[in-house]
Length: 287
Image (cartoon, rainbow, N blue to C red):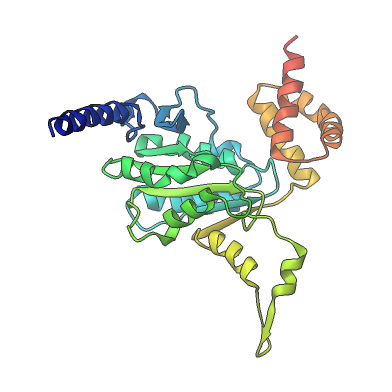
């Protein structure tokens, strides 16, 4: 019987060693180090990393998206004022300013306590832990998920649904989710899913697969759609960026044809393409 206490003691020491190897809860970062943070999980350990060299852009720099800008700006100001506000899903054409709009909001309102935490899709399963980490903070946090889309059965999909609307515990009122995606329903849609639709008393009821996909996007209280730019809108954006880079007006007028050719080569008249052209054109003038 004397061997039993010795065995128990050895087992306790072994458990203590194992506990030191297991990942613990994420430590609080230095909140004064930055206004933007990135959630990172490496080798099983998670942490909020300050983003010290963030991409800065002004709301005024986002051209020809005035309606979209006004809607998300109003929602964000309500959030900052402690009033009711919605989670936001920004969808639509690539390069039209969806993610830039989130960055511009941070630039505009960081002094009023707005903070952004960027979370990769693979780390969305950690959303409950992130929410708990910021729960007692005085700042207002936007959890930013960029270029979001899911495949069937992903765990991150279920975690996001729970944080948005489906969990037993309430999410702190100092947290909102802003996500961007090229897909309105965040998941691939297939032709055969339309065959599952049912006709009931003259009404069309989507099939279960379609309902499941719609259920996630419906948990975002606000949908903001972005559309491809017309030629004139694209040229307006080019002119704005050229002016901001210090290009004189006569040279801006001369750049129109080159800007159109640039867009033709890229196969897109997006805001991103306009910005890239302006950087190239302004850079050549610096020779």
